[in-house]
Image 1 (tube, rainbow, N blue to C red):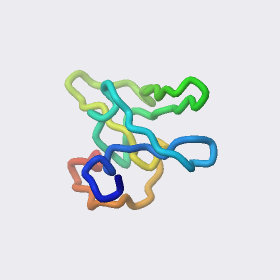
Image 2 (image 1 turned 60 degrees about the horizontal axis):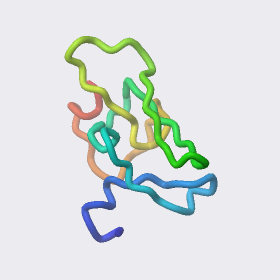
Image 3 (image 1 turned 120 degrees about the vertical axis):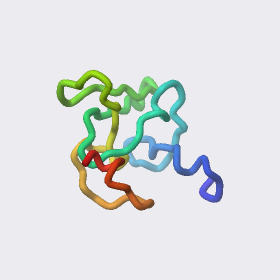
Length: 88
């Protein structure tokens, strides 16, 4: 999996982060932003991911998540983030 394009779409999974999952539905549509307007929650017992806004969203504004897991985590990602994807 690490050597395919799917690697960029998986989430670490489990309390020990010793597994991975591929989110389906709308979750793969969320782009990254270090100033994201949404956050996601993982329910390992129910095998679900829920997305929730962290502030009011303006009409026409793209919904974004921070790929680091926490909506405000500034840690560098495995790819170069453009200013447009950085919410600036």
